[in-house]
Each structure stands twice: as structure tokens, then as C-alpha cells.
Image 1: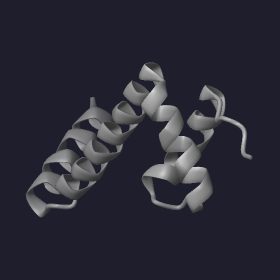
Image 2: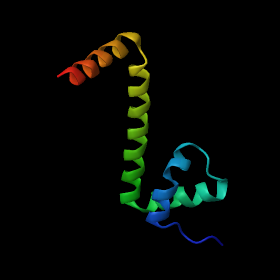
Image 3: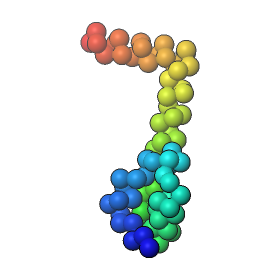
Length: 80
């Protein structure tokens, strides 16, 4: 039988988990640990939120009007 996942192992696997890349058995160990560990549950939610915000920010930066505005700020800082 597989041993329980440690908090340290969970931190190392969180990205693969959120990407849906963990094998079924490893995913089950991950989810069992999160269900039993309040600290890791909060950690996974924080990482999930960070990933979502990063994706939204990238999408926002790709909009032409936002890209031009960010470029103007970057140019301004270089010239100052």
C-alpha cells in the first residue's frame, strides 16, 4: 500500500496536480492529504488562485490597448 503524502511532497507536486498531470494513484494520495491537512488545503487554494490571476493578467496584457499602455509606462521609466 502507498504511504501517505507529506506536506513537502505535496508542495513539489502541486503544479502537476493543478495541470491534471498526476497519475491516478498519485492524485488520490494528493487529494487524501489535502482533505486531511488544513494548511495544505489553504496552500493549494492559494496556488490555484495565483495561477488563475496570472492567466488573467497575461490575457489582459495581450489586449492592444493594455499592451500600449504598459509599453508607455516602461518607456517612461527608462527615460526618467
